[in-house]
Length: 249
Image (cartoon, rainbow, N blue to C red):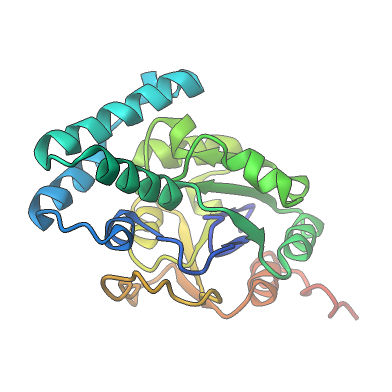
């Protein structure tokens, strides 16, 4: 039985205010017009995705120092003039923490899930202020917790991130449903730790900086494809043996 629903918030509960804001580090680089060695940049990005930094998650200041050191590692490998380095740093920051607007129906979906007795958590690879950003949209009133990789010390899809999610949810992996528009990393990570995954059909227009098509979720047990937040709520109700909201007789 599903006892908790975990949203990767950007793309599900909230949308980027600027549809052309870069969604990841590859798009961030593309948005600057800079031409860096793709192998060097790819290796840097891969190391960053797998880097544990629990000691840097003790405070905002510690995290900002850690992130500055990671950028410096890239600058050492691909020397940039100060203006270009500043442009790329700003684009990377937008990828981690874009300006957001609440997705249509998000607050209603959170309220409906609460009415079904389900805990809801927002958890994503994001900057330090994710909780504040969602609070400014009125979304945290419907959430039981907000987790961000900056504060957890690990990024998805690594298991320590999900362990923090399980603790926040107060649920076992088999009782958790992770919801994302990402058909690759998030699905693989959720299934690897024993949770179920739901892929929400993206409603945002694609960024013009997209450098490759998004990966398609593998056809395997545990992956649920839903067309909308309303459809997600209805599916959770069914899995809990309840009538979907609005259909009780």
